[in-house]
Amino acid sequence: MIKHLLDIQDLSPATWETLIQDTISISKTSIDKLKERKIADNSNQAAFLFLEPSTRTYFSFSIAAQKMGIHVHVLNSHQSSLSKGETIEDTLLNLEAMGVRSTIIRLKEENILSHISKSLKTMSLICAGEGKTSHPSQALLDATTIYEHFNRLDNLKILFLGDIEHSRVYASNLKWLNWYNNSIYALSSNTKKLININEPNTELGPWENYLAEFDVIIMIRPQLERHTTPSSMNLSEYHHEFGINLDRFKKLKPTSILMHPGPFYPKTEFSQELLSDKRFKIYRQVYWGIFARMSIFNHILG
Ligand code: CP
Image (cartoon, rainbow, N blue to C red):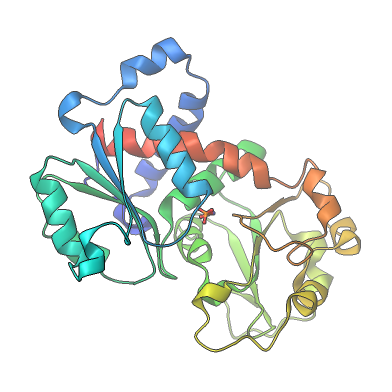
């Protein structure tokens, strides 16, 4: 059992593997058997505090909660006393005093959840996205997608492609991928250089020369909402320089997969035709999202 899930470092590799196995196992569990996993009444009040927009994470946590008998109370910044200046910490302490047992929180600020979590006695915090640093439940559904396809979490060559400096998906995935013997490459739309993240000073050639080597390419959209200065690159340039178009897709080996956490910009990170290709796992990732979040609830509240 873990008390909070703020990022991957709250977990051990063994717990990570259990979460992945549970995600897969829950997906195969009948509705009748799922009733046995329902969260006890004294733990089944949850708050959703999404201070940044979300579709996938919000809905999948919400459906996961419903399936596990958890009552969700949604608090938004405009209608709550956050709009009157109450801090996030005080908000959570008040919810805790009312018996709310878990809060699923997304926020743009960084490095505050860890501090707040120390003030909480009976409430668990589950990070649904923190600034540029953390998105652990996304990493879990990504890991499950990779495990489903390769039946392993190691000995993979993985490329993160795009605006990685502003991406919490990149940050969280990097942490678990580094537990295992993986070769991780990154092509940043900021530096425009391909690097092997374990040997960042080694000069590598043009990224397209390496396309046939990767097992997994994880595309990252331009994270414009987190740019502090306007980007000098427009979306069509991004597509031209970093997008997986059909020509680039044809260079991949037949066993490799494409992934994307969503949302995406049309005709930017990839060509639209690829959406229906079975090697593009974007909707499979979303499928795993509900079961991954049920697995997280189970480990924290179960
Ligand atoms: N992948 C992801 O976090 O999507 P949302 O922003 O829609 O939740």
